[in-house]
Each structure stands twice: as C-alpha cells, then as structure tokens.
Image (tube, rainbow, N blue to C red; front, side):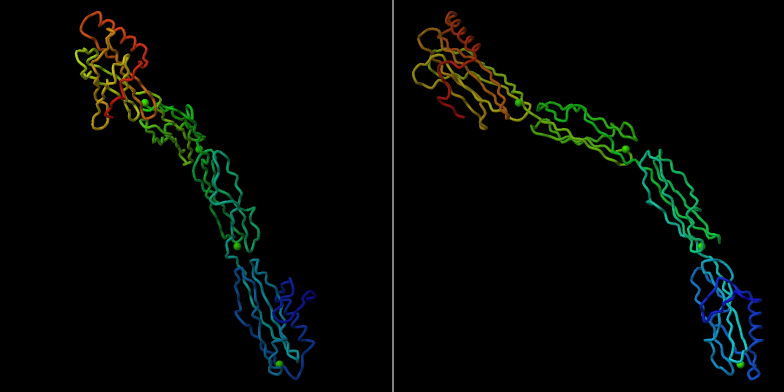
Length: 419
Ligand SMILES: [Ca+2]
Ligand SMILES: [Ca+2]
Ligand SMILES: [Ca+2]
Ligand SMILES: [Ca+2]
C-alpha cells in the first residue's frame, strides 16, 4: 500500500514524502504482477550516473540521474521514474529511488543516498563601527551583531557577547561575539571599542587679550589657565610661543598652546603692543658757565651731555638764544663729530655796555625714534670782569632765563653750524 507516492519522471524531485524501500518494493511487486509478459522476461539494466553516495555540505542537490537499457526496448532512460526529496539546507540522510519498466513490464530499480552535512560555520556581521569610538565618559551602547547560518538561518538571537567596556576609563576594549550552529560549527568576531577623550581643553587668558608694554621694559606675562575635562588642571603644560622683542616697538602675538593627554589641542593668543612713550634721558654739563668779556673771542664752554633711550636711537639738537644783540657777528658755533653728533659749543665772549652782562640760554633737545622729546638747558653768562656786582646781575638774569625755560629774545645759534 502506497497511496501517497506520486512518481515523477527524470530528475525532478516531486514530493516531501520520503518513500522507504518497503513502499517502493510493494509498488514494484504490484506493477510486475499486472504487466508481466511472456515474450520478454529480461528486465532492463538501470545504473546511476554519478556516485551512489553523495555528500552535500550546503550546496544545492543536482541529481546526476540514471540510465536504463533494455534487451528489447534499447535505451529507455527517458522512462525512468524518480522518487525522493533532498533538503540540501537540512542535515540528514536522504534517498532517491530510480525505477524503470520495459514495455513487457519487467522492472529494474536502483537508489542513491545523499548525505547532507553542515560543515559551514555561521557568518557573523557586526552592527555598527569597528573599531568603535566611545566618547568618554559615555557608556558603551552595543549595537550588537547579526548571525546567519546557511542551514539554521538567522542565529542573531543566539549570539553571545563577551567583554565589558567601562566608559568611565579611557582605553581600548575588546568585545567578542560568538555563535554556533546546530552542527556545532563555531564562529566569532571581535570588535575593538575605544573609550576616548575627544574634548579639547579649555584655555583661558589671565589678563587682557590686548596688552601694551613700554619698550625697554620687561614683559610680565599674566599667563593662562588650562583645564581639561579629563586631565584636570594642565596649566603647567601650556607651551608659550613668544616672539616678543621688548626692545623693539611693534605688535606681537603670543600664543599659548596646550593639549590633553589624548592629544586634543587648544590655543589662545594674546596681542602685545610694544610702545615707546618714554622720553630720552638727557643730562647736560657746561664746564664754563661764566665767561669774561675781555675780547670778542669764542670761548669753548665745555658742553658735554649724556643721552640714552630704552628703545632705539636719539638725535640731539642744540639751540642757543641770548638776551642782547651786539652787531651782526656770529655769536655761537657748534661742533660735530664725524658721525654728525654734537660734540661741543663755543660762544662769543661779548656783551653790550648796559653793564648787566649777556645771557646765553642753551637748550639741548633730545628726540627718540618715536618722537618723544626731552629738553635740558643751561645758561652761560658773559660778565665784564669778576666784579661781584656785575656778576650778580648777570647770574640773576641767567637764573631767570633758566627758570623761564623759554628762548631769549635773540637767536644766537643757527648763524653758523657745522652739522
Ligand atoms: Ca526486457
Ligand atoms: Ca552551518
Ligand atoms: Ca579632554
Ligand atoms: Ca623713548
């Protein structure tokens, strides 16, 4: 009895039912009983193409089929009936039966065994990045992994995860995903998770971001403070890039740079303007502040001076005025050295007859490179003789001229200069 068997031709596998040899034998016997012929009693010869036992490891089953020859009918391969089904995606032992009958009802059969085994490990696919960066101090949220097996299908729910990630501690962590199929084939994949500090430090200027300093003085840097979310106070690691030249006027940029231990960098700049607002230092000495009027001769008054400026060069100019004019002669003469620097001054030892003596007011003007000016003055008096009376009058005039600090009425200088 085999009411559910539905034989089909050629290699087509037509039923989910796996017929046993017992069912097949019953069919053969029934067929033989009804179709035996006395003329041809020799059954056909049926033989398999390909191997009698086939092993599949996941690939589709392609039946190589069988051939059949009969002594009377010849090649009757196209009459071969085939039973059986192979599920190449399910492990197991399968049988395919091949039956042929000649035109006189003689039967022949054969069979093939197919062994389906799973030798292929599941495939794991990581979801999300690998490596995966987790920004400290956030927790690692595992995107998981998918697993698929050619025999078992989706095994994602069976994936086992090993390896903890502590988002509060910087470093690299390994998370392992593993799974096995029903046949015991193992698969695993690893993900590198890096807990990283990705936030740059905060760096802040102490003091103003735009400072002014006097040329020639020392720059006192108010500094910066640097604080990192992970490393804390890293002010001591700030690197200052300072091209400041405090002896030269100009605008300078001081850069403060710092990086946290993870290499996140921060920078801030400060502008420093070096300015010269300080006038030169000037001291003047006259070795001969009083000269006698015996003749009209020129007398070197022994003028010396020291001048300096904290920032750059200084030019010194001299002017001489006097309180009286006698004739049109030249009354003052300045000397200059080879470099054009004032190096001496001679005045005419002359006075009119008013009897109070002549007063010269000598003004030295020192001007630095940036226009800052210092003036210093001295007086020289011309007395008729050493008479105390006349001396006192002349000295009083000189003191008044010095105190006034203003040019006197007559210009003695500029009549002749060498500079
Ligand atoms: Ca035959
Ligand atoms: Ca497998
Ligand atoms: Ca940081
Ligand atoms: Ca100056």
